[in-house]
Image 1 (cartoon, one colour):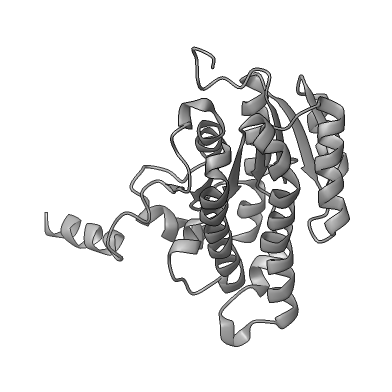
Image 2: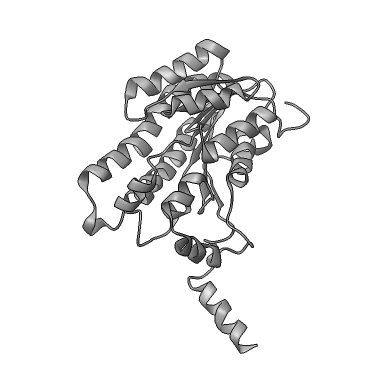
Length: 269
């Protein structure tokens, strides 16, 4: 083990959904710390452009709805680099149109629900299944991106939050069943993170509501989440498994209505 346990020298990582947002920030950080990174994304041209900008990175296409696409990703990664140390399941069904359609259960379209689970849960499971034999050989790890919405009830995104809750349980199941073989599995639960997709999907007024409930002085950005992911992927987290690291600026750590209480007491002063 390296004296600097946060370093990733000699390790090979797959980052799904790596062409933008949190995935891009993670790919950049892992390569900066010495890893060879496979940037896997359905937006393949964007993935190729990013890989060209990063030393030791390659791009591979990925469609999480297609089982063969997921399995081929892992096969091609190992064929190219000879090993696999980290699987970062970051890709999910997102976007402005999806976010607008994903509301409460009473108004939920069955097709949207099924597709959300096909991408976020089934696709993640297939990626883990394909990667596990290789991760056993390297005593590697899996890091799943989930969401703080998977830990809380909300008025919106019932399908997305439910799918991410399923991934949390999958994370624990893999940690329990493969830990003795040397494989760790953890999850990072971001709060609202200022990616380009989020800026497009959520009106400023709604972003402000979340920011008011955040304990920091700003919402998180992709690099904030990438730092948490890179920690869990590194040997610095060698004794951490089966855990969900909430990375939401403290939004989930306090009683509901904190922002309202803050405003009230500010008026009393």
